[in-house]
Image (cartoon, rainbow, N blue to C red; front, side, top):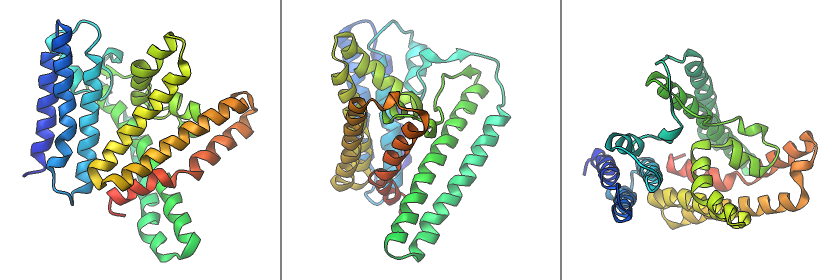
Length: 294
């Protein structure tokens, strides 16, 4: 089967789900179910296509994520279809003059050049090393690669929406400046997904007086998302590693809440955050490297 067909199937299922999800609770539930069914598409690809499987899993999740938004409010057919295929929540897009964001594109280029350099160290320099130095170069380069790739991707996403005539909300906010791990995940890293997690899981429970349960559920869903991508590409072992990573992140957030890290001075707070994020990053980056064949 051509690799293109599963991607087309995801678009078709998410679009059909958006068309169905209107008027009644039953129709909205059916629409969400159709969109969620697209999560099985990666298994239609050959097992050896690791990166393509992972990409399709991420693509399918974005469609399913946007589909859950349709359970609330009133949407026209056009609004539902546009929302189903948009990475960013369309309710937060502001109409603006179409603009070629040259500065954003320059940042894309700069970040991706740094990413290429980091990947070179992982794939070319690391294998020349032995012992602990090998792993230090591999995992240090992987951490730099993930960070620079993410920064560049969100600059490109911003430039794309601006060219389409929209001003998107803040998408990514200098995660390295975080003073706590909770701030890293909640207010700086991948704000598109973190906003969805907050609005779908955290805030409903916080309004019921159960904010800690809301934080736990948001972390759990995020963990399951990343584990799903790893499972689709490489199977249970890497998925379990990703679940362990987010379990550790949740535990760290609990520890820093108990210690009051948010009230510390900027330097020790940032040192705390960077030490934890870098220290356990191999649990996150190793599955990514294996997906890429590195």
